Length: 281
Ligand SMILES: C[S@@+](CC[C@H](N)C(=O)[O-])C[C@H]1O[C@@H](n2cnc3c(N)ncnc32)[C@H](O)[C@@H]1O
Image (cartoon, rainbow, N blue to C red; front, side, top):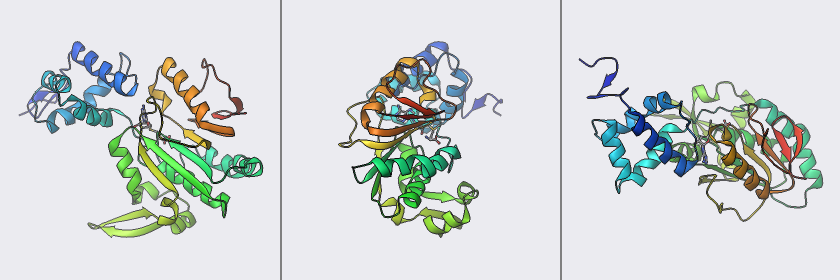
């Protein structure tokens, strides 16, 4: 019988320091996700699935696979496994409330460009994108709007693009919003809520590594959400990303970062509006 630290024929707590270092550097080079030296436990929790998926017996074999010609393909799955995709509808509610009551009215008042454009950068499985889309749709009414959504994770982005959510994901949503923007279906004996075409038709999804430019946009944005993404990055990477995001905003546009994040120690040209909200003046 397997001991608690053994699974499918290999000891999953046996990741050697040099193997961890190899994986850590590879992930950083490709995604700039900075695991630091103390994230070995996290990697050890997420790696066994990848070892098993490749029918391998050890982390040593897995590192050899990553170093082989098949490495780039596996790296996509590895990053999917490592990136934390945690998200939920209307997370950090204050952003959606102030958008509706303060920022969108200001954008409407001063904006010459239509459609109004938003970008949800690091959108994970879509809950944030659709929360933002609902807010735009409710507030802008007849004013045209478009939204781009992106993530580095293939798995998360695929889920976001489909726009299917289970009971649990939508449970805390306002019933009126559920009624207006979700269609209830039965799939394989499970109740599924699908985001309506009315909302999806304004939205495009892109697989995008935020640290790889050029980005595929030919327009500037009035609103950029880049929330709870920079938590992965070191100061140098954050600095680079904040400069790129500044360039990508239209004058007067707003950048929203996560409530637990800050731009402390980062050089930038933004005007501070309120904690976690910044404006390009
Ligand atoms: C914790 S989730 C946050 C999701 C959402 N923004 C929210 O606040 O609920 C972080 C997301 O950032 C994505 N991410 C991490 N590094 C990235 C990179 N270099 N480029 C693009 N997306 C990245 C991850 O795949 C993950 O889906």
